[in-house]
Length: 183
Image (cartoon, rainbow, N blue to C red; front, side, top):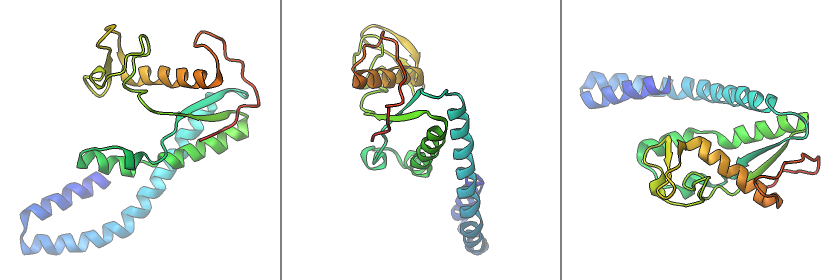
């Protein structure tokens, strides 16, 4: 819905005729009134569905580990289109939904430092921006390890959590009720 309105608005603005300006003026007010409510409800519903699915995969006593994304909007430098998408992302709301649903099931939620999780090789621990030749591909420049970038980052997030807990990566994780959320 938002994308369709953005395309229409762009087309009308590029025409620049009087009739286009009138239509733009008429639709912009309506869009603000209607779409803002619909999209916020839609995003909220998506966050509820996603958080429910995520928590349902867990068992009581297990731990869910997230990156601590506090103040991420102020820390990143992106192009205009990417900033627009990032600012629409309701990650704090999603994390809040996951936390309260996880707590109800006895699953603990922990936040770890997100630094270099997407740039660090999960095999040899080499950190470099050039390890990410594409958005979805991770390829280590040192050991030539290649995998999906999200999978590599997930392994690094797990390793950060285990390091925080004082466990080695090969040690089994014994879930306890004492795990609490921090951030």
